[in-house]
Image: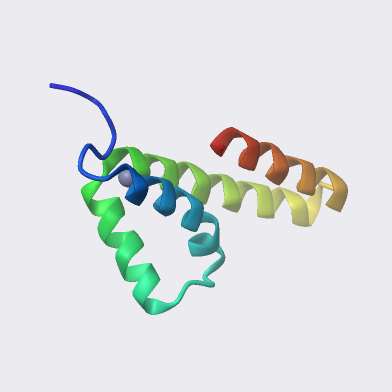
Length: 85
Ligand SMILES: [Zn+2]
């Protein structure tokens, strides 16, 4: 057993991860959403990344409303993007 992500098509994976941010913002077209969802179903590593980011987004947005100044929020998102690339 290997644990390599998406042995079939690595480009799919990269694309899916990049689209995650847009996906989470709800700004994808229905076609894109469907293709990302299909990829997440077929690719556990990407699904993990998706769940991580979606939870984080909720946490960050809740924190932001109450505690975080906008500049810090931006820095958090920048840091997340840096992790991904
Ligand atoms: Zn993938």
